[in-house]
Image (cartoon, rainbow, N blue to C red):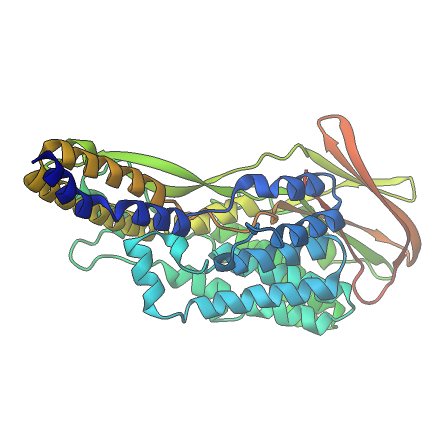
Amino acid sequence: MICKKKSEIKPAVKILPIYFTFLMFISCATNQRLFMEMDSAVSQSNFSAALDELIKGQQKKIAVYPSGNAVSLYLDKGLLEHYAKNYANSSNDLQIAERLIEEAYTKSITEGFFSYILNDNTKDYPGEDFENIYINVFNALNYYNRGNIEGALVEIRKLSLPSGKLDMLARKYEYTDPRTGGNLSDILQKETGVSELPQTIAVSFSNSALARFLGALFYQADGNAESARLEFNQVQRAFSSNAGIYSHPVPAAVEQARNVPPGKARLNIISFTGLSSVKQEAVITHFLPFIHPVLSIGFFKIPVLVRRPSVITGIEVVVNGTNRFYLELLEDMNAVIEDTFNARYSNILLKTYIRTILKYAVADISAIETARKNGDAAGFLVALAARTAMDISERADTRMSRYLPGRAYIGGINLDPGTYSVIINYYSGRNIISSEKYNDVIVKQTGLNLLESVNLK
C-alpha cells in the first residue's frame, strides 16, 4: 500500500524538478556582480577600461547583458563610447539601441502573452521611455563633436517636433476608465484589495530643457536665428510646464547664451554628473484566502527605482587661470527617469498581479488534487515545491541602462575670439575631488563653441 502511494505520488511531482529548472533558467536576471569591474572603471572616469570590461563580460559563459537585453547592451556601450570620445562608434551603438526599441513595439503578441504567464524577463527588453529620449540627446552631441551640426539637429528634431517623442510621451499614459473615471492604479487597488501598491501618476515630463537648450545652440551654429529663438523659449516653457521636475531656477546661462554681445564669442560648457537611478526588486506581500496554507501569503515582485547618490556638489570652470564661474543645474535627469517610469506602474502592477495569482491558483489546484489522491502530506510537499519554484520564477524586470548620467549642468562665458586654457574642477563640499584640463581651446566668433565634460562620481 505504501509502495503504491509512492508510485502514485511520483507522476504528480516528477515534473517539478524539470519545471523548477526551467523557471530558474527563464527567470535568471543579470547578476549585479558582473557589473563590478565596469562600475569601478566608470567611477574612475576610465571609460576605455569600462568598454574593455563590457566586451570581456559579453564573452563570458553568463553574459553581462543576456540576449534578451540587447537594448541595454547597445545603449550602455554607446554611452561609454561617447564618454570615451569615440563618437562614431557611439552613434552606431545608440542607433542600434533606438532601432531595437522601435522594433520592440511591433513584436508579436506571443512575447507579451508569456510575460503574463511566466515573467517580464521572458521577453526582449523594450527599453524605457527615458532611455528612448536620451538616446537622441547623446547622439546629437555625437554629431556635434564630429562637426556635423545638421546631424545633431536631426536627433533633436526627433524629440521636439510635433508628434515627436516628447509629444508622444505626453499622451502615452492618458488612460482613464470610462466606467469609473479612475486610472488603472486606482481600479487595480479596488479590485484586488492590495492597498500597498504604489500609486501611478500621470507623466508630467513633456518637454526637455536639456534637449531644447542643445537645439537652440545647434540652430545658432547653423545660422537659423528664428529657430534658435523658439528653442530658447521652449527652455523656459519646459521649466514652467514641468514644475515637478524643474523645481530649480532657470540657469542664467540660458539667457546669456541667447544674447551674446556684439564682437564677443561664447564658450558654452555642459557637464554630466553622477549615475542615474537603477531598478531593484521590491516585494509586496498580500494574504490570499481560500487556498492551501503554504500558499496563502502571496509575494508580488515589482521593480522600483533607487537613486545612486553623487558626491559632486559643485562644478567650477576656470578660464586662463583668472576667469571663474560655476555651472548651474539644467536638468535633473533622475527626476525625468522617475517621472516617466512611474507613469507605467499601473501596467507593471496589473501584469504582476495577474501572473502571480495564476501561478498560485495552479499550485493550489495541484496541491488539492495530490492531497485527494495521496494524502495531506503529499499535498503539502507539492504545495511547498510549487511555492519554491514560483519564488524563483517570479522576478521583477530590473533591466535598464546603468550608465546614463544623473544630472546635466551648463554654464558659459563671453570672450574675445582666441585660444584659451580651461580647467573644470569638481567639488565635493569644499574639496576638489577631480579636475579636467583642456589646453588650446579655440573659441570662434561664429559657429558653436561647446565643451562637454563628464564625471559620473
